Image (cartoon, rainbow, N blue to C red; front, side, top):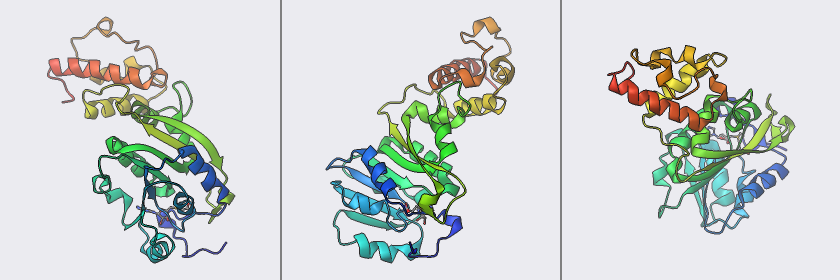
Length: 273
Ligand code: SAM
């Protein structure tokens, strides 16, 4: 199929050609009549045209490539449910889009080069988002959805699974896109909980601890956590099994460990505050 614009690599422009995947992706969302949808990077409209055929009450599309905006206006602009934003998703303020406190349902075949910043932006705004159904590089999807003990389990699994149920649905082969990317893709859904599975007492401390222990993921926690354990604390004072490796801790256990150490660190005027 001929492209409407010459695809640009720096914007991750691999346009979906096999639209049967768009239909499958939208089926997993079970769109309801009062849903407010937000599509990241509509491109040449492969997903957008399926969204247009749904019963959603409003559909926001955010595209950075200005060359595509007139075409998107012409194709979808006459539908009163559509709001076409010519802007960068990474600088978009979701509060400008949300109306009447109705949470957004996000969808997108994400540009590969900025997948992580987009996903972490969604995580930061999770109080405004019901769920996100996205096509991403298969390996990135595995890292988000993996369970403790699996090879792909790590920092993203922990951060996302505290706030959301992450589910992998199906894969999309490279040939379904033009230009053909080097990687296989997967469709995943991230359904944000109303309340996180565990309350993190200090996010900066938690992030630092998780990054530290996963920096040496094959080592036991008693070795990697040394700088987090107050000097006057004996191993027997710590109600966690530090013989285990971080990759065996569930996200909730990891939060509990961080809350415990943070509390004692502060009591000892700790090093990390
Ligand atoms: N949804 C279309 C499809 O499935 O064929 C296009 C997907 S393509 C992988 C990624 C799209 O995101 C492109 O249209 C690209 O221009 C757009 N894009 C890239 N960076 C963006 C950004 N920072 N903000 C909004 N859109 C962006």
